[in-house]
Length: 259
Ligand SMILES: [Zn+2]
View 1 (tube, rainbow, N blue to C red):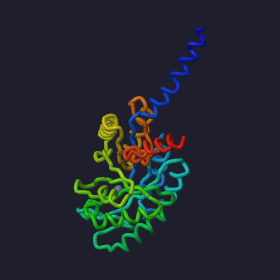
View 2: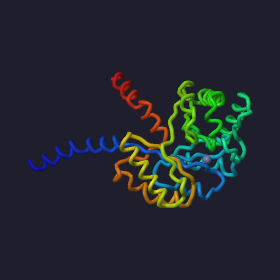
View 3: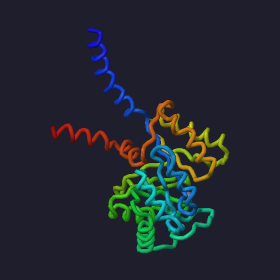
View 4: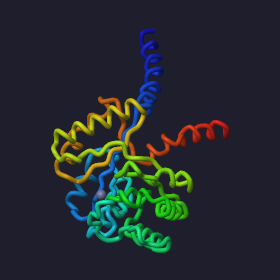
């Protein structure tokens, strides 16, 4: 009889635990500016969990980093250089204000061809371009017709219209909530990481962007294995987009109807 009780208890607990795990608030972490330093990129790819690689197109190891990321089962996105208000140096493949629609599309095409398996993009710098509805709508039109890539608004300016234009054109999109390493000390990075976790626990999800600094990699290597204890789950950024846009519930609904 006792054994039966245990068995029933087991049956009750197992599905409950699986649900509890999948219902945890989710976080996603994107590491920008990859492609120049192969060793740093490899350290990012080797982090435990689904950390996303954002690769600069005109860098020495762009293609290799994209391959390595994809074949380790993680998501890779194009880190598109875009003109900033301050006029920061952008490297090759940048989108600037005096480009025509045709030039913007050509630039995106050439950049995406350098990042195999890219499932979406975010922007590098871009505080000027991301305020411009014209250029942003051209970018979104391109993403829409090219295998439905998504857009993560890096939010390098409060005036950004990236998400608004993405939604108007019908491109899946979401935004960055936290920058992990504006201040490149392990203490500050750890503080921002826990801020990301608090936001996720409050709102259900949070997206953070960091850079391949040794300090950032070290904090992530130490902290990611504890995410379940902190009550969050690290997921690919596409999963956050699906969750925020209610795609999950739609999938469940359709599956339910099919029965
Ligand atoms: Zn960047």
